[in-house]
Image 1 (cartoon, helix red, strand yellow):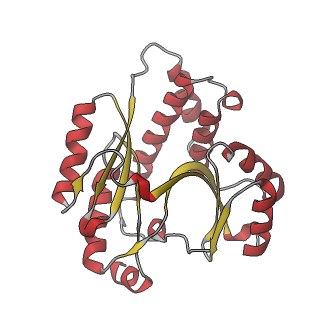
Image 2 (cartoon, rainbow, N blue to C red):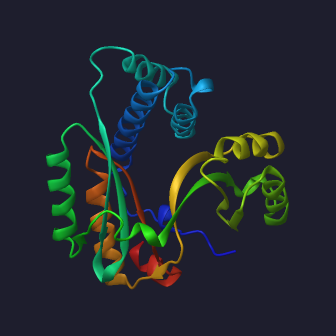
Length: 247
């Protein structure tokens, strides 16, 4: 199988971990509140909320913060958020999908467009790059969950479609509709996963050089630091030699 992108494993934000953690908690809390407001406040009866709570637990978000986010959804003071997807091209034509949740569409659109422009990219129309990605469920496990062959067998028996494994861990893919069932079946055999979520999976990846990688990192940092942006997905990969230069 194709190797999983090592982007997430490149530690290029030294000294900013606390700020990143706080920002992550804030965005996860927003997703929990919106998920609970749109459906049932009981995670067992609301698949989207259950995934949001699981994602929060995976990064050790305190239980009281999770419960407070759910409770907020039932109050009259919960903000009305609109979910929107932006698509564009980063430096060297790298495809980027940005998913946001906002209470001010004009503000968010203006900010996202400015980030692309400042980093040598441009914002496109909806659908301009998403055709190069598949919308799928992704379930992550650490390398300690088992060998690549064992995880592959467990995944196929659970109803998954594909698996990627390397020294960092295992990533199991399935259809959007099957995510909850496949995740439950895997946990019965492999234990609790690190994360279960819906993603945009690139059909192909493009390796980038050092200069392009630096520009892309700057763009993604700017996007992820925006309070309205929930996820940023791309189709580039950084070769080991370039990653070593990034430090």
